[in-house]
Image 1 (tube, rainbow, N blue to C red):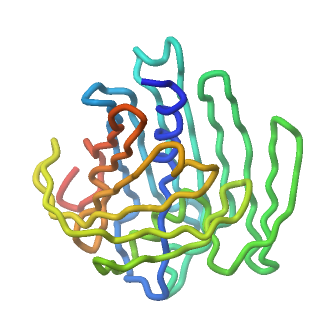
Image 2: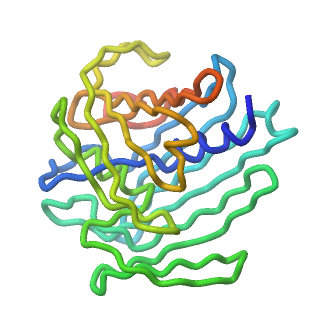
Length: 254
C-alpha cells in the first residue's frame, strides 16, 4: 500500500464531507457522543480514528483524531487532530454555525497547523497558517461549513434515495460546493452487529481527494441518528475501510 494513499483516505475519514438541506430534524444524535473506528487496508488494520461531540461553554465542540497502526508508524506515522467549534443552533439549524476550525496534522514528514475563523455576520473567513505565518481572508456563504462540522450537520437531514444534496464547504484553502448522492438502502453486518443503513456517495472535490482516491461510500444507520457504521474508499490497489467498533452513540449502547 502506498503511504500517501493511506494518508489521503485517513484524512478524509477524519474530516468527512457531507451535505445540507433546507429542513433538518431536531436532536438527530445525542451529545456527548463518541465514535471509534478501525481503519483497515484489505483486511489489515492500518490505524484508528475517534470522533467526539460535546458541549463546551455553550458551544458544540467536534474533535476528530487519527493515528496510524504501530507497523505503519515506522515508515509513515500519522497523528492528526481536527477541532470544530459551532455556535449554539436554533431551529431549523440545530447544530449551529461554525465559528472556529483548527487542524494539526503530522503525516509522514508533513506537518500542518492551521485554523479558520468564521464570521457569519460579514460572511468572511480568516485562515491562518501558523507554520508558514500567513493569513488570508475570503468570502463565504450563509450556508458554509468546515470539513468536519458539515458531516455532523448532514446527520440531521432527512434523506431520500435517488436524491442529491449540496453544501458549501470551506477547507482552509477555498470554498467548494459539494454534492452527495443518496444511493440506496442496504442491510450490512459489522463487528457490532447487523444494521439497516442508507448508503451515500460524496462527490469530493476538495484538494482533489475524489480524483486521487477513487469512489467513496458511507453507510449510515437508517434511523434518526444517522450513525456512520462503515466508510469505504477504492484506491489504486484494493480499498480502505473505516468500521465503527465502539464508543457511546445510543442511549442503550455503550
